Image (cartoon, rainbow, N blue to C red; front, side):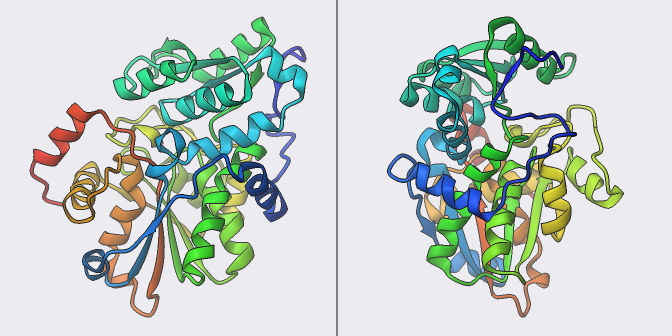
Length: 339
């Protein structure tokens, strides 16, 4: 990588600064009064469905509609004045894109966002409305990381990846601190997994306070690179998967994230698109909340694992976001599901 590229911190695998609980706590202080303290909801119907007492951390009510605001704001706020003056660049299918654009607006930093041309229209529009300058690419034929590095070099921008960065990881972990503050004790935790920022940050926070908690990451069935990586003991790269969980459609987990997942996460499981649709409909019909397919990953796995919760009664689930096009959402609500 050319030395002229501006980076919030190195994203190269030979410089793996690893965030810890102190970094998560520092991020929480930085986000105090800026990020929403999102609600933790419960449902007796959901408890019966899962065979356990569930605590839903509703990041679909976060600023920008997803947990990503936490990591984006923390990373940009940690930059030098000169880096913020020059601006930042990132790549994202939507939620991190919106988060960086919004955080940049709040912090007075220009933002360039590389988004797949097939990203949900809602997420593209919101990113642009927050002030992000969107550049499109083809996720199936082009490499967004290479595009990001090139733009950073050409324009002197600071590259803030969506998950493979210590400050982003620490920021995402603050949602878990809030969940623990309200739920107190948890036996099991389910967290959506794409690139691993939310899972890594959540695992750091959860393990520091509850050493014996069982931590489970949940990926789309079509894109189980994290599951393969954990079993292989190394990062596995896969072709760009196709799933309605667009926020978790990645080709590999992050280099900063993977060692944390190896050390702190007990298992990685998957959820099918049909299960995600059924879970999305459950939230709409029974709990009256909008959760996007990616945000449903943890809950879908919890509902499918009812027989594994015996003796583990308190289960935390992070609902990672609620950004879904209304047209797509209406189709999800009306189509039948056999999950």
